[in-house]
Length: 306
Image (cartoon, rainbow, N blue to C red; front, top):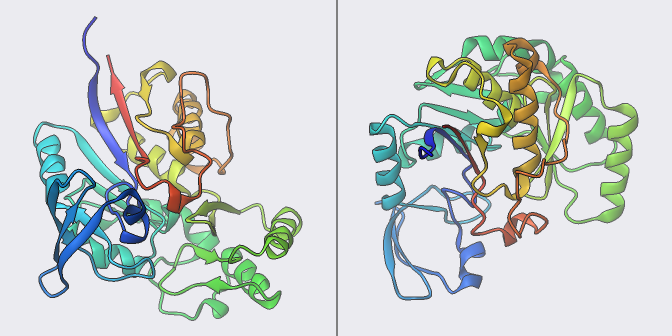
């Protein structure tokens, strides 16, 4: 039997390509020689092995690092013809600040699917699909003044007292219940009763992300897949591989269903839904751990054909 050929990799960032001391120090990994001006640091594992890393601009998570070796390996994969895509929930400012330090990619998706750069440029066709729900992706307008359904719901949640984060978000916003179980219960009730059908949501780093129903990571992946000649015609369900599903097993299962539809429009506009992972998809043992506990859980998907 021929060895399967990997044609594309879709990778998350936090906990996959990017790692933080608050996560890896509990595993005996340490960071030293951090130089914020040169954006470099040394990371040493519990066995004493060291890697030179790129030190990313500070975020609320602290000092993020991506190893030089990771960048080299991705470059080798792309040189060999493997497509590499980054898919993250990060806001616009974080994505743009990180890009110079990340591996080169064929496309970068941010804001939980709502922002898409292909070969360094915004994908206008994708943004037009989301326009009726979230408005222009780079509009300089206060979120409270934006008239689209996403921002009206955002204003509703803010009026109900929820901690709403809209900074540098244009096609998505975030709500942090800060571990308050009653607040989370109230938010879920509002989602069930008052959230418009044009909006969907997902958990990201223990926070609630809201975005157009036609967006979301899995819809963005489906769009890129259908829009990339080297990856079509659609693969059958048996030709997908999930290296380590982690919290994204449902996304892989969703993608299998979408590709069987054989229509790009249906795949890209389908609302986010959790589909039970089929038997072939084996989530890693840490699937149900909190994000900060999944330091080593690689949340990337690959597709391959025989």
